[in-house]
Image (cartoon, rainbow, N blue to C red):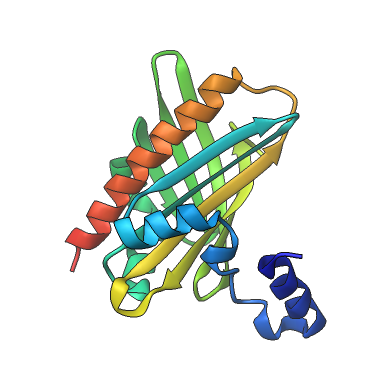
Length: 191
């Protein structure tokens, strides 16, 4: 059993005492990836379509504190500036719902995403309508003390109708990598 599963089982056995704590990023990625992110500030991105399941993750280290990083990255109205090809990002505070619209060439996206705070450093999201409806994932923010913050973003969905595998894997890796660089620069530039 991996350390992540042991932690998960332990948290379940203890009830909700640890329910608001996300898993440690170190337990979610390969050791080599973790080391590159931690030591070299690499941004690591992976997207896979296996059988019917599409999944992705992105992880980066930001040279700012966890509270600052979380506050900036959960200001969803800025996503139109930070996510490539997104022209419109409207956030409804009352429902914690973000509407994203945009695209490139004939590939247009329109999705509504609901966010739920699961803990101080854990945001869960679900696409509730539009493209990728049903896709779910999480943002995890992990303090590294004086080294800043690790940000882990992941999601997955099971489906039958996907764009070609190369497009949905490599395209996502390019967009998520570019977005992560923009986000990190934006977070580090804000006071």
